[in-house]
Image (tube, rainbow, N blue to C red; front, side):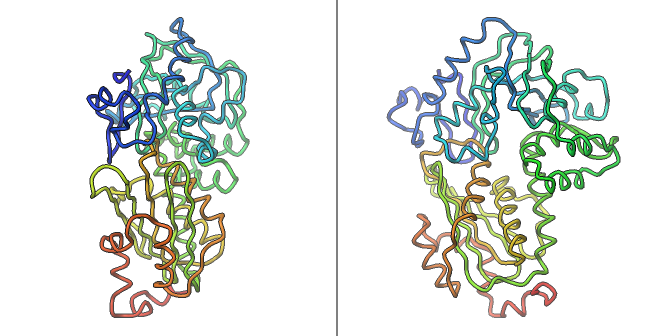
Length: 422
């Protein structure tokens, strides 16, 4: 069974020899549950559906664009072996933090991925049948019954990644066909049809019109945003971060002239073995994200940061988790019409299996719905913070760049321009 499992993680990998020694119960890899056993039932059920090379089911809708080989990439729909039903939960990340890891792996391992390699530039060229079919699919806000025909029976493997949710079996696809009309929101149809509208403006327009962010990300991946001559397919992992960054910068521009908050605010929430703590303090905008894994090496900490000037380079250490949590914080500050500095802590327990950055987004969102802990000073806030996080605060602060700024001899009023103080 281990031949069918691949793990991709910056912090830990399931090694084949460990799996052979472990047999699923010794937990030698450091995970709280065995990913192989968690997926076994789903894989067994999918095997029953593959009597031929044809496959039928209701896509959530789901669509994936790989990044390997860019600018020639693998694209295709994601379809579970369930037809004419509401399968949206298979791709509904916003609902997963209230599920178990076994349930999440079950949803994702049931998604069969059709794939075909094409140039990213095909998005601006009509006539590619598979691409046009999948573009129709991703425009839908509801599940769509979909037929797929494969060249060979899909390979039964489940790939885990720290950046995107896992997917199940995959195979080279001959063709795909929608057997019902997709339900496309009017605003989506309008934005996609506007071949003179810049991609950034289209993304913001749909977000303001309450289109689900996953839906927006799929549209970007499928090359459906932007001026016609510039349209191209975008790998799924890139599109997730791109949408987070575009929306985050939009809110950043709006909050940097707001007044500061007047107290320290601490929000926190834990789900699926992941703790997110949002520590806001009176300051001009600064943001620093810490991600710590409680298995693997003692150096399993990632840190990225920015000041009120924003960030010009990619946050390569914290990566996608940086952008999705930053967006949630910025959106909250925009809602209360204030600005603040922020330490954001993400602590990952052994029970977590790498399944994407979505959980940090959803846990941060849930944290900001809770009643915050208040403190009058930074030091008082740190006393409260120590009660919540497991890893020593001093270890985080040793790696912190924004804390060094705060400890400078000059006052905040001297450090930050007056037009930023609000």
